[in-house]
Each structure stands twice: as structure tokens, then as C-alpha cells.
Length: 264
Image: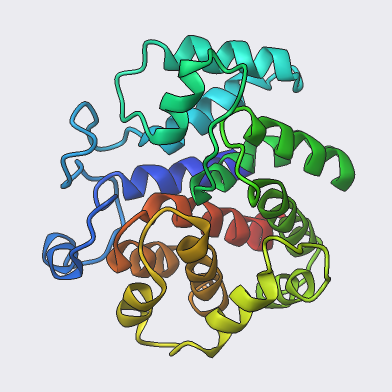
């Protein structure tokens, strides 16, 4: 049975090839038939990775999945993360470096969207909504201490639960965006930005919103792809990847949304 973690890791592996390439013309040339199978990275950021392996985002998701096989504990996750990352041969992002500097006693101040991708193993624990939110926030707080992270995690956990229960993806996003739960995240603004953008010109929209890692760009752009391109997993993965930038973080969240709808 396919899990949320399976879906997220599959998306990460697909995006190893195009990850962190901002030149959309280069992506179109490298992937003329779309992003349908794992490829070697075409950027210089993952020199120790080959097709079928994961980026640092996928690797940390896999580490979390392994650490929660018998259930979640903060101490167990911290130990597993430190053990893996102290000898890690993949890309070390800013959040990882800052967290390693304190031996994971305090997190980085990062508000990078990529930590949202890591919630899949927590969804797979099969806990109730409130427990899942609390644990998903706790695992994220090990490395990402930005003020948007707790609300961002809660937003997507609630959306995933709703979609899994049969709510349409766009409706679930809208309901949470309008719920008033998220004063710092301000998802209603992100939803309005995503909803009002051109529904076919995804390359231009990605450039307008921003292709980078922060919540300010990745959040509305992920909502845009979820609202407009989530009917097919393959199509969603391709248009998101060809948009460029931090493709993996967006793709892993999109894959979980689609998985919740199709296999919830």
C-alpha cells in the first residue's frame, strides 16, 4: 500500500534532476518530454547523487520515516537526525548547518518551505488530527524555528486531512485559508494570489511569484499548482519542475495532496 511518505519521496526523486535550476529554458531543453522518471541532477548542488536517489529534503524525510517506525519521540528524532546529518554527504542547507552548530539544542531561524515537505511520515502514523498537528510541528521545530513554520505545518496537515476525507483539494485549501487560524501565515492572501493568477501561464506565474525556497514565494506558488494542476500526478510533477527553482519542496507537498485525494 502506497503511503504519504512513498508519494513524497517519489516526488523528491523525480525532482533531483531539475532541482534548483532557475533557468526555465534550460529545464525545457533538458526535459523535453516532461519530468516523468528520475534523472541525474543537472545543477551542481547534488554532486554525490544519481538518478533514483534523493535530495537533502527527501533524505531528511526518509530519516524521519525511519526514526518513527515505532512511533514518534522528540528525543528519538533528534538522535536519528544528528546521527545522519553529522556524516551526511549531500547538500547541507542553511537550516541544517545552523542546527548542527548547536547539536540540535536550538533550531535555525529558517522559514524555508521545504520543512513542510517532511510531514509525510507523521501523517502516516495514523494519529488523530490534533496529535498529528502537534507532532508534525514538533519534528519541524528541531531544525526550523521561523515564526511561520508552526502555522504552515498546521495549515497543510489540516488540508491533507480534509482531502483524505473527501474534500476537493481547492475547497480544502480555501476553507483553511479563510478559517482565521493563521495570523502570521496569512493564507487568505496567498490563496487570493494563487487563485487570481493566469491558470495556464505557469512559467510566467512562477517567475512572478518567485521560484525560491522561502514561504513568501513557495507557499502561494504551491497553492497555485495545487489549485490548477493537480488532476494528474504526472502533469503536476512536470509543470512544477519546469517552473524551476526549489522544485522539490513544492513537489513533495503537491504529491501528498494528490495522494490524499487518490488514496486517502
